[in-house]
Length: 254
Image (tube, rainbow, N blue to C red):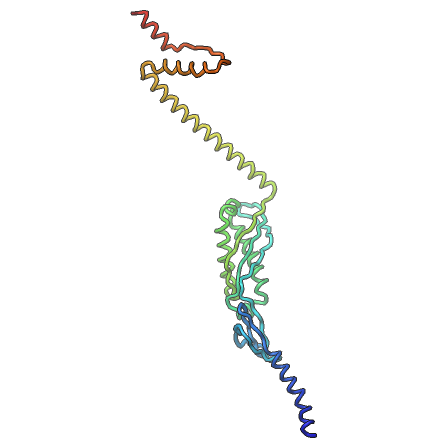
């Protein structure tokens, strides 16, 4: 009778102990770390595997160490030359020290996102529009360096920052389109002028060579007449060069 009574008393205790042990078992995955607190005080890291956390006395926070992508939303920025633009970006970061990410900041994901937004606005305000469009990589590296340094106390490692899109006002788009069109027209005029100069130089050289060679001009004239006569529909107005008339004068003197 006593044994039955003891068994009846111990049975709930054993079950309670088993339940407590099962509840205290925690699985930490390979890409995670656990930050353990005992009576509210930080008492160590929990590495991957099966770990025990005593209920009531201990608590823990799970931290993901994988690289995270933060979409930095569109930000209204004013460049150094007072042009209003909308800029967005993407930030890649990971937790390097899990205990700092939990103890050093309330919400490291939100804090990193907000910091990247304000930093991007500040950096865009330090450059002109041309620099923003031409030197995206350098500006991205500068934003990354500033955010990475500011998040060091939080145990955050910034991998990269990439500017995705720079949206210009409509009037600025039209102005840039006109500027690009004017630039293309200027290049076309320059190329045409250079071609005319080259053609004039070649014609000058050809005229000099024809003038120096006796009979060369006559041969050139005959060749031109022959080329025109190949098409019967052509009407030829023949102009006699002065050199030919001068040659006739020479025959007359003889």
